[in-house]
Structure formats: C-alpha cells, structure tokens
Length: 443
Image 1 (cartoon, rainbow, N blue to C red):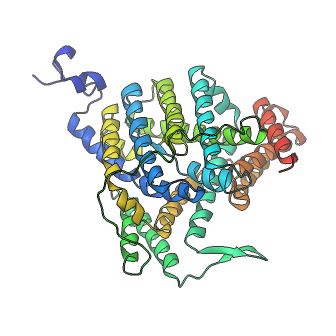
Image 2: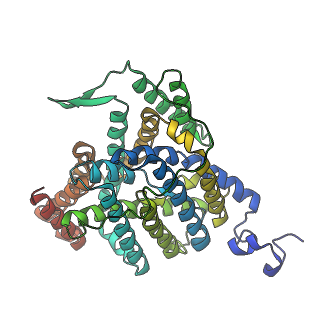
C-alpha cells in the first residue's frame, strides 16, 4: 500500500503535517527543492554583512543575524503557512537602510534604523491581521508599484558600480567613469558576466559561484584575504536588541517606516503571487489560500530580524527555483532553514568576500529588479511620467524614500491637473501630502 492509499492517520508525521501526498510530493523531492532554493539565495549571507557594516554595525554580528533571521523566519513560514517560500534580509531594503537612512540625508544611527524596521514590521503585522493590506495595495497605482521595484534596482546598480569604482564622483558632472584598468573594476564586471551567464543557463547557485570565483581570483592580487572556511559563529551581542526609538516622534521617522513598509509590502506581494502561481496554489479566482498566514510570517520576519540586528527580512523570489525543482510544501522551507543554520559556521568565507565581489551580485540583482519598467503602462503620460520620476529619482538622490515621495506627489498632481480626479485615489493624495510636508520641512 502506497502513502497515497493509506489512511491519513497511518502516514508518516511529515506527510501528515505538511500534506506531502495531497500536494503530490515526498520528502526526497522537498529536500532537493530546499537545497536548490538555499543555493540560489545564500549569497545574502555574504552580501548583507558587507552592506550593513558600512553603517558601523559589527560585520560578524550581522553575518550571524542574517543566518539566524533567515533560518527562523523561513521556519515560521514553513510551519505556520506551509509554503515552500524562504525568507532572508531583502536586497534593496538593506541598501536603503545603509545608504539612505544611516549614511544618507536622514542621518539615523543604525540603532535608530533598526527601530524603524521593527515599527514597519509591526504595522505590516497589523494590516495583515485586519485585512487592510488589500486596500493599500489596490490603492497604489500599478505603474508606481512597478516603478518602486525598478527604482530600487537602479539604486542597487549605482551602489554596485560605485563600490567597484566603476563609477566615481566628479565635481562638475556629479558622477563619471572610473579607471577600468584597475582590478576591482575588472573583476566586478567579470563576476557580473559570470553570474548572468550561469543564471541564464539555470546553474544552481550561479550567483554564489560568481561571487566566490572572483573572490578567489583576488587572493593572489592582494584584494581578498583567506582566513579559513569553518569557524565558530561570530557573537550576536553587538547588534542584539540594540533598537533606539529616540526619533519615533519625528515625521522623518514616519517617512522611513513607511518607505520600509511600502517596499516590503510590494516585494512580498510580488513574491507570494509569483512563486505560488508557479506552484499552482492559486484558486480559480486567482486568490491564494492561507494568504493571511503567509503575510503574518513575513511581518514576523521584519520584526524578528530587527531585534537581532539586520535590515528588513522578507520573502525571496529565489524560492521559485525550489518550486521549479518540485517543492510544494513548507517542508522545502524547513530544509532551507536548516541549511541557513549550518551556514553560521562558514563566517570566514563571508570575511573573505571583497567589495567588488558583492558588487557583482548587487549589479545582477539590480538588473533583475529593473525589469519592472517593461511592465508599466506606457500609453498614458499621466501614468508613466510620475513612474519614471519615481524610478530615476532613487539612484540620483541616493534615496528610495525620496523617489517614492516624488513619485506620489507628481502622480497625484498630474492626475488632478489633467482632470482625472477619480484616478487620484484618497490614499495616493494623502501620501503625496505627507511627503510634500516632509520635503518642505528643514533638514
């Protein structure tokens, strides 16, 4: 008698808990899917510490926080929502945390930035519990949603090019081409090409392979330093529970919280729909069963990650790789969580990764995110013009929040002045006013 014909009570525990038989899968398939997902997203344990350490955060502690946040959050998604979706600190959100909130115009300390991440997670949790999320997402114009994603991609792109010294500052033109004869620039571009080619060929872990390859090449050139492979995980103490809520009453704090929330909200929605659609989970009406559980898991991730010392933790689109490998239940995510815990012991490798190597991965992620521009409506200028302003403002002002703000303001004004009053929804107008007040206030 096969598991499919056995009474539910006689099936193995994992089969009963995750519904393996009902979903047409088994432990072996879920294990392979878990490995696949992990290898496609494990680059974050190398890239995230490199980005957040620029704020003054302890790099070792951020490495440990990244692994633990990914493991625990993914496990919650697995056990509570039963989806093959993995979570980790989000790309773009970590750059916003470091280069806009802390090092940019807002001048937060990293402790204050962690407090903003925590608050955004709390709000995400509340709007998920009370079903407000659908209203917010439906109120935001589709073009602005795509523009936010694309703008974050462009923002990551300029950060990557700057870190590799491919783009440098210029007093007259603001930016200009760096010296492409220098090894960091050469190896960054080479690593980027390798990552693109391997991902095109659907090589599992292609991004990780590219990062490690150019890091190893840098060893004899003195650009990277090998300190080992396996070691005891670095202490979490330097970042654990270091949140600072001293700026919570400022409008700037609200803007930062809202920016974290908005990017996470759309990123999470896109990931959930994209991954679950590929897995065949959407019902006949296109709705996702257990949507609330998945959203609660994601909001928990943001709160938990901030408490232990990392930027917003969110669902990863790379989970689609595991789904393509046959993953259909939360057991896939359980295996991903286990692998992230094992990654804790490979901190020496994270220390070895030079800036140009992580820049190659950043540039690749930038290209993937910028695809949102192709999905915009280019027939109505009151739609695409504000979206373009939103997208290009992010890299040019070095601020995701500024780009979002300018996008909402120009969208609301364009619709009202053009006489398209019904398309300027109340939520958009309110947000535009909030951002306008923020820009009008002195720094």
